[in-house]
Image 1 (cartoon, rainbow, N blue to C red):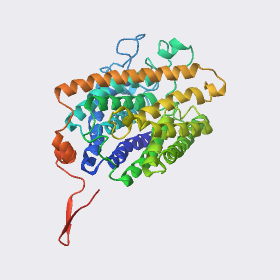
Image 2 (cartoon, helix red, strand yellow):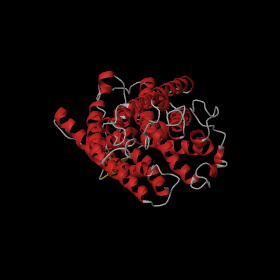
Image 3 (cartoon, rainbow, N blue to C red):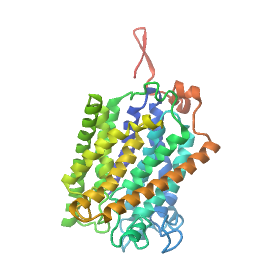
Amino acid sequence: MLASSAMVLLMTPALALFYGGMTRSKSVLNMMMMSFGAMGVVVPIYILWGWSASYGTDLFGDGAAGLIGNPFEMFGLADVQGAIGEDGSGALISVAFQMTFAIITVALISGAIADRAKYATWLVFAGIWVTLSYFPLAHMVWGGGFLSGEDGSLASLLYDGVAPIDYAGGTVVHINAGVAGLVLALVIGARRGFGSEPMRPHSLPLTMLGAGILWFGWFGFNVGSFVSYDDLDFAASWVDETGLVWVNTTAATAAAILGWLVVEKIRDGKATSLGAASGIVAGLVAITPACGALSPVGSLVLGLVAGALCALAVGLKYRFGFDDSLDVVGVHLVGGLVGTVGIGFLATSGGLFYGDGVAQLVVQTVVALFAVVWSGVVTFVIALALKAVMGWRVDPDDEVAGIDFAEHGESAYDLASTGGTTFKTGA
């Protein structure tokens, strides 16, 4: 579990590489700093009240809606050893693991607002958003709250005995972050020149490297989320489950690369490196909630569909005029929806294609829609408040000149001189 936690933590610097390569050279440092800033903000918050708000008892008492845990129950991880297992074993390991999920979820949002947001406003947003959107959804889905399978939950009101499936974060992480990215892109507005000037990635090797490390870290993300949490022995069932999750994660990701590249080849005539890297992430996103519920063949199908649909979805920003800079909406929101709803079709137990009816499909769809509404409303309120108090946009001249120097006093690629000739060491 600690190894898985370290792998998931590595995903945030990997995301910084992935996003950093996709931006223009004048804003790569700011983009990467948004990921590192998420690490700096979320960790102390998670220790102080995040764990308690996610996995504490319902704030409004047993039998209530179960929207959020009591943030003061285990404030500062007080008495946290009694939170998991009859003897309290493994609690701090669980804190370590779940903390990394909160970090990467916040960092994912940043790609939607690249090149134009004040860094200070982003950091304040990160702290407020993780408290009001991420922790409640984590409690609702994984902490026995309103989107779990417990009595009084949304699923129990729809179908008795049919619990929603979100193995490692389709709703809590990807739908949540994808909706937040869309809302911020709408509230903050488009980059100057969006739609009329080329805004190509400045370093595709960085992006491909980031995608590869993300794929590696994702095994900690998915395989580390095994269900038999309190039973840490190496029983055959535990080994079988984690083996299935590993194979499913790999299968869906590989298939998503192919799905994305086929769409590119048909639509644009070229299969691109950016498409391959984006396909990796799309497949990983889609399989995240479903990795323990599908067969390997079902995972291939899910990945192929996710890669193709996400490749089509990333172009919607041009049709509808919202500037989702690095395709957070097209990859994470769409991929998260495909994975979460796809469980209702492809789950080996409960799936429509396996002859088990529509109950699981209905539950998955309703839970996904609830997560969309929750994240959308919460993010909209936070974004508007910060827009009024702090402002989101950097100075127009700074945006044109490059946000790196304006916000951080640095540049990724300095001017160098050799043989009397001055040149720039970057794109």
